[in-house]
Image (tube, rainbow, N blue to C red; front, side):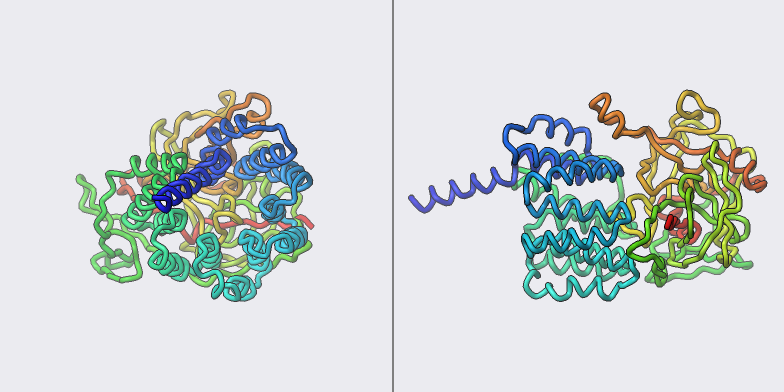
Length: 509
């Protein structure tokens, strides 16, 4: 009887540890539920020095997620000054990476490891710093050397998989987590991360399966906050078919009757319009070897997005992405690197046109529609490289939404509003219709950090884009588009536009 009682008490203690309010806040921040995270943070005690350090760290983490890295740094520094917890030092190290302060990031990561050599996030920061410096092998060695002694550590395997993914080694990333989960089936975070990996790479069936398991495991541990977020995601995607998708693509050729089947492709066969026997033919591009950005540890860098135009010779982006540049590099979604210079820049419109030192393949060039008429409620897909150091910089992300208003803030006619998610790094990226036409340029969102400070609230889904008429003025490029094209799924759109969307690195000094 005593043994049963002892086990029950230990179980209660375990659940209490899992379900602590601060862990709930961390979970919500990780899942992007920042308004809920802020509300819970305000309810945390602030009596002791440790209480204040914890609250500063959590607020810094919210600012970090908002992309306000300078503001996040203030809170992370405060937290690490009041308490020498390795978690606070590791967060500060990661924040330095996002500010382009690679040397400081490495120094702080090493300081963290002196406090606790098992701090996985600090190991990740050191590895990621080497990735940014073009030393991929060295980055992988950080994890390979620890693999034998940390093979059963959930966080270690997640970060190991993440480094693989950021290096474009998708198969290794997935394999790492699948092997870990087979050995350790009761690991909710690993299941959730694997599910999100599958979702990003277009395998909705596996994504739903692994995230469902993750949700159930979190519920078993009393982690209701994070389970609710996953449940909401599953509810949105419950109607997706769970059977494997047909792996067939139609390659664009003069002879439209030729088809190619391949085990490597994950693009469905294009649909036929009900009123037109013509099919939409497109190429499903696959990522290749990723060329590293040639930046040094001492470089101050900023990143953004853009897209290829004018037969592969130029790039369109935002003016603020390339402001104060010394050197500009662009790399497309299949890993090809080029150097660029500014051709034109209009600060009032926040647009810039870049000339490439060496053209991309002309097939990657996107057409700019002339006099495009936006429709409120139409689908809008944003592609770009948001939060590249956090989400990965080798391949772009895609988010889906609708056009919610055909004017910008204060009814400015040069912008429009959309619900597709934008984050730091999306600036300058293309916005597509569901027919694959460029319909705008991502520019920004409501300043959540400012409203957080002044109003204590975080608005959602208020994002802005630049209308094409301003792009037409800047570039003198504009064509009449075919309005009768077939619609594309998000998956088809993503893999078709992969080589056309670029990440931009602006080296300031």
